[in-house]
Amino acid sequence: MDTRISSSLNVLLRAIILIIISSPSILFSQNSSDEWKVGVARQNITPQYPTWMAGYAMRTSPSDGKLHDIWAKAITFEDAQGMRSILITTDLLSIPKEFSELFKTKVKQKYGLGKSQIILNCSHTHSGPVISRALHYIYPMSSNDWEIVDDYTKELEESLLQLVDESMERLVPAKIFTQNGTIRFQVNRRNNKEATLQNTTALNGPNDYAVPVIKVEGLDNNLIAIIFGYACHPTTLSINKFSGDYPGFAQIELEKLYPGTMAMFFQGAGGDQNPLPRRSIPLAIQYGKQLASSVERVLSEEMIKQDSRLITKYKEIDLPFDDPLSLKEFQEIAQGDDYQARWAQGMINDINRNGRLRDAYPFPIAYWKLGHQEMFVLGGESVIAYSLKLKEIFGEQVFVMSYANDVMGYIPSEIILDEGGYEGDTAQRVYGLPAKWNKNIETLIISGMENMVVPEK
Image 1 (cartoon, rainbow, N blue to C red):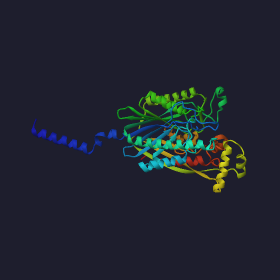
Image 2 (image 1 turned 180 degrees about the vertical axis):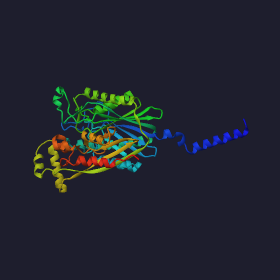
Image 3 (image 1 turned 60 degrees about the horizontal axis):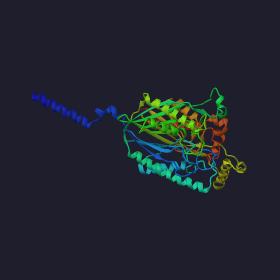
Image 4 (image 1 turned 60 degrees about the vertical axis):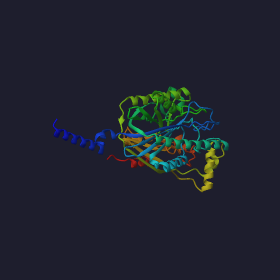
């Protein structure tokens, strides 16, 4: 070969190598735009001693063992720009504001993550432990019972903080895919009578049967995590044994189907949706397997790969209450011996202490965007109307999560507030709120969500 040609080739090769070294994105641009980093971790949060269980006023004694362990699970996301967020899911009934605020403050102090970057979701299983002072008027508990709850709450906080540490330390390169599935065991409990369900030929809505699924894969295509949701109360069971109810059984089933993968369930806007029929362990297992099967079907189909771009937003909206009952009415209700009497006495104590009852509540809403996948996050026990309205505005493909960051009570729609009934009229007493919500709350929440959405550039 001519030495001049050889010399020219060497110069050209050195130039190409120099360009690749100085600008690796030229060679890897197709891959780098969709490469995330994720870290996953889990903690067993099953109480190791009898403690009161959350969710039903009819319970009169602490727990008696378990059907299976209950868990807290975390996944940390980091996009191509280094932006981070963390999603924590728990097999718990509810997360009160005080617990959530303290936990997020500690995470911010250590990792610098703001409120928008942390989602703390509970499945709303009615077979988990009481934590903090959530729904404290429901339970006929002694001071010793509450001391046990306080001990467990401290243990839970330590477990969740350890969970954050572990998920942050285990970041690995990954790809993220999303898609919606469907399953139909949720039943609108306001518009269908459980007692006559067996002979019902047509169920009444509204409903949202979507099963949002997030698939997280390593660069070797092996599954790392499956995140999935559904909008339906985990109230299949009412026994005094710990379990995650149908979401717990769904997670167990998926982790059997995909060994080495962590399955995480988040609750949707299912404040008025029940699994029906219910009240048996076989039914809880059945619904769990049905949900897992729906997720499995989505995973086996083509899903949408999401670019490595993370956007998080958070705000609190002051939701107003209607006028409360009079002092005389509170005093009359306080003469009873049920949870409503305890609630009424609590309201009387608040009036005596503060001279008035609160007239609004700071309701948390959040917005996450993973690539192009939008996720709308609501606090409280939001009813299905919020999911349907958000999908009407932003498209059927969006994900809707509720029971997140602070579960302070039912969040009814304007229609439900007009109709009354449990969710619209008296459920706030369960959570210790002073009065029913004002009819403007639906408009305030939806407009608050609209204002947070970041338009495409």
